[in-house]
Length: 469
Length: 122
Image (cartoon, one colour):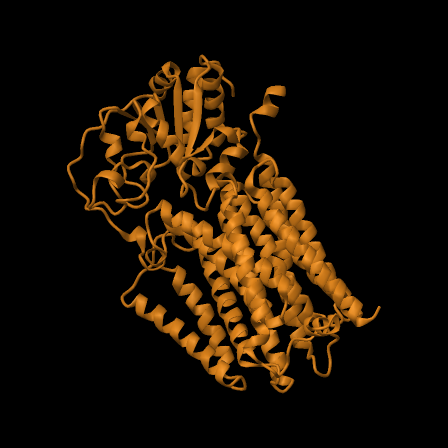
């Protein structure tokens, strides 16, 4: 085959891959078409990789080694795809780290390759693109490892702050950008390149250090975006349009998700990245207001008399592994003709959409997973709201108390329902350490205990005590 | 009008020493358009599926394997030292982790999303 014909085939493959990648994401618009989206993605990847293997630059003698490297990656990838769903956020973070690493490695290889070829290829633009690729890839690599460590609780999840943190981070970034500028002006200053790599890696670590667990959904989405942008930068370096289109799709996905997360918390990007949110401590020692409490059996009876029940799940539900008990409760109520819906706050869980996946795993039909805006419109007609491991996302202070750190954050307006049942271990304030006046309302009954045990007892009371287990 | 041969040549070999920003303009167009397509497509993704969306985009961004293959591909020796190829192979392995785990876990999660209808049949 002539080189031209080969090149044409490669480019045609890339074009097909681009179309399929777009369809892959488009089909994610509903759970029905989504499985097709995965297959479109697989086909696109096969076209992209297959096309590249045809590229004249790829020697036949390299093919076995390429296959070996792919298999080595697959050996790590398969177990990573079988983690429990509660661990999906850290898996996602880890996977961003691999993406960043791959981009940084390719950028580094390209720089040194072109440098020792005499530097003619290192035009200012291409050097700038390499610098962007290595900077984004490097900081995504270490930043995502940090995020994964925090989510896995290997690293303390609370924000780690120190004096002058902002200044240190700023200086690191400025130093990295200065190295990049120096390289663009004169690509032969190769001593700047390792410094750029080290600064990028350090910046990634220190950027995530002060970010608390509650902000992880936004951070993961943001790192997703960076991983995409590093692929785009690689596309500019290698003059490869497939890398640019796929990277841009990934980058815009991360961007949209982080915007949704930020809006759901009423915060800005800068505030998430530099605000150390979790460190906000509510003024402790306010007078303890009386709460009313109920047993799981009382609570079950209340729900039995309701015609509509809304369950507000939070990450606490997942931690307690209560999803399957929730499913039993759901079945018992549904059997009595009671309408049961799940109100999902966008930031519930540890990553965008996390709660939906956890409930889907427990076989809750997705028709009953309802978004915050939708449920708030009907909240006044709801008989019973069952708050399960959620806290800040139902705190009315977000609407009523301008002094509250979460003021302005959109919430699920549980306080507008006729009765509120809140399952909680104790009266300790939640993640952000903010007092929640929902618990002291007249219409609220607290059910103390472990979410799994409490919901199990509720389901049991409804099934007439007949022991299911 | 550029002839097809010229377009092909431009696609095959990036402009080496011209270095003019103008030659990168087509790539910039591609980037801008792809971003707008991406923003619009992602905006319509069901909120139910944001977690699978992230694992799917993980796999998609592993398209960097294309760059890794191009770096690892040339026969080592002469102009292409072995250690450059090794970096490329490491990048291939890292990207493969994401391709394999990304697609597999997305499929696994999507299988869990069930509507009420098939249940009625049960």
